[in-house]
Length: 550
Ligand SMILES: Cc1cc2nc3c(=O)[nH]c(=O)nc-3n(C[C@H](O)[C@H](O)[C@H](O)COP(=O)(O)OP(=O)(O)OC[C@H]3O[C@@H](n4cnc5c(N)ncnc54)[C@H](O)[C@@H]3O)c2cc1C
Image: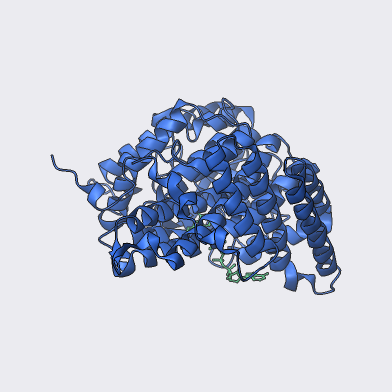
């Protein structure tokens, strides 16, 4: 049978885990050794999953099936058999089960998100990982015994969802009205507007926020596990309709109505908002890494294309201006990736904590805000420019390039918009003084920069950044500057990590390439220099590692 997808997608066949030099350098720095499953996932994604994801996106989107043929209400979302198999295969790589079961740290799950990255397919897996995490950490023993094994059953595992947002409240969860009532030992939910319910109709169970007392505010929010089917095996909630979306097509996003919906409380119902935010930290870090993964695929494709396409008698990669574009985009991507992996590592190391959290967990949460915002912005910019590198054909839906941009745009919106990340970050700084821990972490990281001159230069920039942040924090209208603070701190951490990772990389060529990107990032995002030295932006050899897979 003919398969000419490689004529549409140039990076088909390379290994997104093994062939990604910056990823591997970072994992080595963080002392995380990818196992066979993660390496095989890198191959599976480029050889099979990308093609399935592209086909689902363009011609096989999920459909809501409200009724059975015998007139029974089923509220089920139909996906193609290939879509089912793709999800099963991804689950089979342990993307959810390995981290949820404790077999591997959560870093495993997050890195697999970077490799998979497809916003639709990976959203389903993120939601499933969040559900497994919440049940295993906050469910009582009977709930855990009944449902948790389903979520760590590998390729036969259950799927999950998180229904928090309502029509009047995505950012403002305190304004939501879904109410939980207890009768005897049974809790039920009533409410009609879980308005952005991703995985509805696919998920076997969902994590849901509901008020345990009426009234505005987040202190009365409880967190519940809600199975998709009730005790009589009938739909436990109604799905009103599925949304028409710009991207993330593989994951159905629906509107959910609760009517006497059976729910199981998670942990202390007075602490629901803390648990809900903790569960959200997983999806924020997933979002950051998936954003980086989408940008990587788009840039990799664009690079391979630029080595083939000619204009004015040369390959387009040989034009100095386009080479500069590539170097700048690559440096932005590496900065975002290292920052996001750092957030993932810190969460992985602190995820056994429960409220009230120590600084160890609060720091992971701070990093989740920094990385989600910076990675989402970077991904949106890189995927947009990758389309332009393909010239006019980048804009055509008959190739898989435009989809990357459609999928990247949502990363700054869902799981809390960029303003909400900045405000949540500000709250953590003002209430918990968590920026002090971040300053300490930066000081510790500096010790990994072997070259003394570079180390002292970066140290000086850290001191300058601290002064600027402290000045902004002293303003009476500090909220106005929260995004500036976020960007200053995020770029400083990313930049420092780039130097640390470069100097810890043994291979001389790779180290040189990483150092070049670190310098470009530092000049652009920390020192804010407009004119960059020519030797940093003119050498396409620093990108050559992207040719290895072919
Ligand atoms: C494809 C998709 C899938 C989704 N899936 C899910 C899901 O599965 N489960 C779920 O619970 N939710 C889901 N969501 C909802 C998503 O998390 C929310 O849309 C998002 O958090 C924003 O909330 P909102 O839409 O109510 O916007 P609003 O809160 O109304 O915000 C509108 C604008 O105002 C800004 N804003 C709001 N408050 C402030 C403030 N205090 N200061 C400054 N600016 C402010 C925001 O940044 C934004 O730009 C999904 C959304 C999308 C697009």
